[in-house]
Length: 246
Image (cartoon, rainbow, N blue to C red; front, side, top):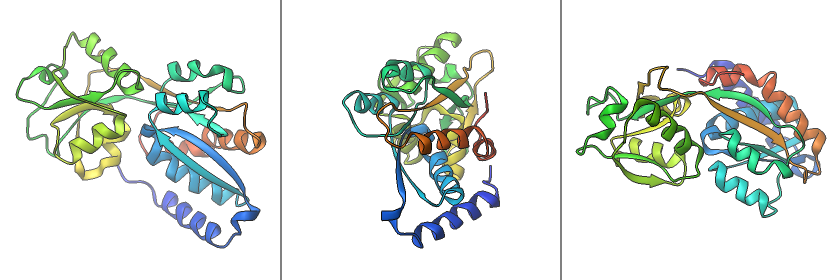
């Protein structure tokens, strides 16, 4: 799927604004976002800054569980976007009530370009001759993966456990693994570097991505504006990137 030209134009506009502005005069907004949202937030950051040239958005990406731990330990941030609601609930005491689900996602089996191992279903992930990988326990994609496999009655032969979904994507696109379950948007973002195998609707799950302003934020108005942007103008971009909307 191609990102529409308007997104690219917005990115270039934002870059021009940023280069022509004095960073000292811009209000910095720190956003923590799940690694599954990293590509989308790079684009959304630039689009938001193009519409709000006085705000400098800084996005930190990582596994939702790790970002939540940082928040609990007092890491400074204004906005938190998680890959699942469970992680968001764990840090509810650090959030301005209530969090909002701004996007949805589905899961796919990611394989090498052209699917050379001929992986057709979740059942194929049980094969001993495949290098199938997933994420560590506690990471949202692992929770979603376990739910999908339980629905399918499959026990996958996992050979490696990554820190986040980005680690799964990297190993498959680098040829270090044959398959792994990731978000559909991850497959789209790889372009020609990977292929996706659909999971039947009765076995798949709908991943819900929530976002919230942190109580520790000293820029709550700007943070709220960023959240509102994702639920408004930003939705067109999210759809182009393969996300669903709640």
